[in-house]
Image (tube, rainbow, N blue to C red; front, side):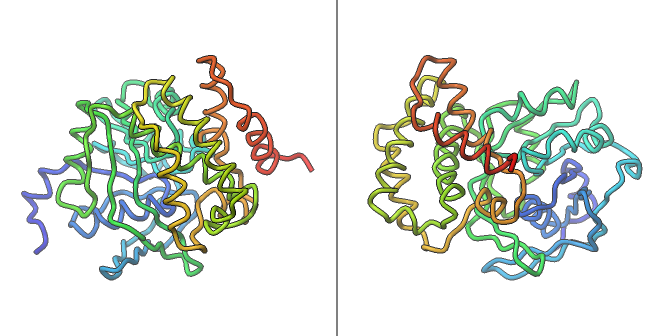
Length: 303
């Protein structure tokens, strides 16, 4: 049953900036619940399509491409653009944000507030950990591969984000130890950088040599995470390696997809941050010292 106008009015007004894989998921789940968001992107599209084991959801367009067409600010902006594109979203954030707007950042890394807050003075920035994989298909549709779930910190703005997504299929967990959850996801993303360097999918982790390298790298990342305030267990590296090895051998990751497409890589927020935070805390990062320049060069050249 579709929500009544009164029920719809009880939910915050939302906008999705960046209708890639993650942005399409949240836009489609909001639309499915009867609360179609404003969708803003870099290129015009007639609409969005999400596919999953529960069927397809089509979000009517058009995808807006001109911030000047925004008439009023919204209550919640779900920023789903890649971290490499954050600066380019500034005109959209200026158009969509008012004094009470909450910006929920659906990006990788542990530095979302630092990256986005300067673009939205006066708005609360809520970082989120995105736990669900989704892939863009050749036909433009997005395939959702797991139950959608976000983790956000325990803040007033997070309550607004939770209210915006309440009643959709996207679960929102509020954590009193958000740093631990953010670093847990970052360790996973950091190890996935090895897929971009090798040009291989998850099956590569089943190699003994690459598996040993991944385990050593994850152990290095764990030391930095703990120095940064995360409370992760000793077996976290082994657990993550086991998860990579248990995944389908052809399972990819967004940084590998970007490498294959010749797009800029999110190497800094996924891998460079481990090296930076390690230096600031006095934690040695010998594997990062090799891996980060390789990823940076693969992303940015020259050559």
